[in-house]
Amino acid sequence: MKILSVGQQIEFPGIEIIYTSLANLISIENISDFDYILISGGDGAIRRALKDLYHKFGTSSIPPFIINPTGSFNVVSKIHRLPNIDKILSSISKNEDIKKITVPFYAIDKKIFLFSCGNSSDVAHIFLSEVLRFGILKRGALRYIISTLILLPFHLIVTPFLLSSKSRFFIFTPLKFKKIFNIHGQINDSMEIDLKNYYNVLEFDGDLSVVKKQKIVIQKVGTISLVTI
Image (cartoon, rainbow, N blue to C red; front, side, top):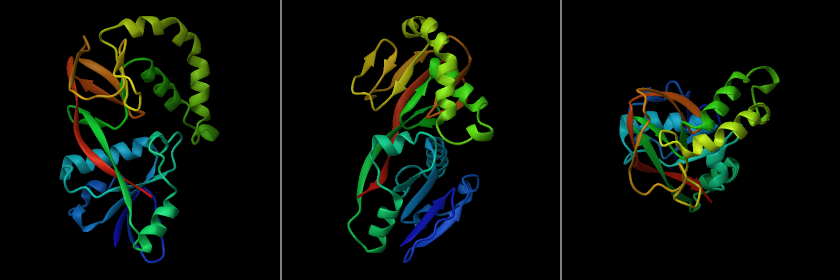
């Protein structure tokens, strides 16, 4: 049994765990040498690790993910009710049956996301939250709460206009509905959106990234396995 730990050095009796930083993950030559990939971090770390692995190896050879949620919100871990990694590693070390769930992920060109993407008020919220990432606000959810309070007047004024705009959108795949105004939940088919501009800042699972394209296509591009018990 061999596990690749990304982002944090972890040891567990009876299991060989090899460490690599997120920055060096792309240098791994043979991902099939590993039975599992253990990712420590928040949703952004999961997305960035998946992006590097997907672009280098495709989805067919990527081992199941074990998530160690050490970020601020850990949406992926919460919406899929993933257990503590100690319980997972204990089950693996005892050769017990390991359950896995299949989770889709989506892309705009080469930029991927698991659950959230948009160019609406989420961009302003993420941007301000990143500006506040210092000192005692560096870790935890407090900076997101402060950001929400600061932006509350902005949200109250512009939200009706954003909801009615055809060039603005927000996707949150755990939502049960398909679409309300320009808020999208489950994505079953590809979507094309005209952003009206060539240079656009979009949010992907809590990360901000620039998309230099006016018309974008959002579509499911693959699935990954998440380990549970």
